[in-house]
Image (tube, rainbow, N blue to C red; front, side, top):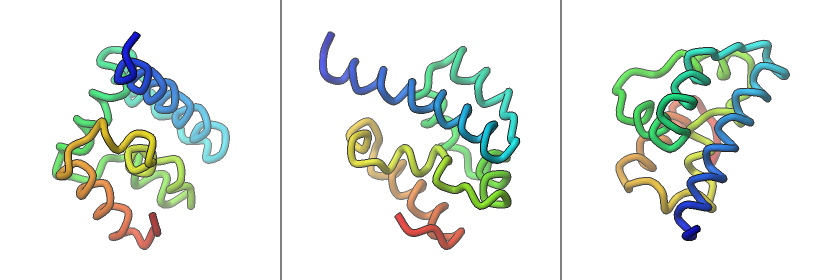
Length: 104
């Protein structure tokens, strides 16, 4: 398996882990998020959420729960995964977190 496939697989696993942690730590049951991951994979799900101009419900819920560390945006900005995303996608993730006063 190539490095990019390994990286994508790792990202997918972390996307599911984000769902699990949000459910445990914030009682946020993001069933639609999990369904999107199951149907399209974690990488495609993240790209879709970043392409949407509106703030997704998960980001809002995790902000209200003081758990922004469990957002897709934080995961996307991890050094390990940055190469999977375009500069525009990374800027979108950074801006959303910055707007919520979360330091990356």
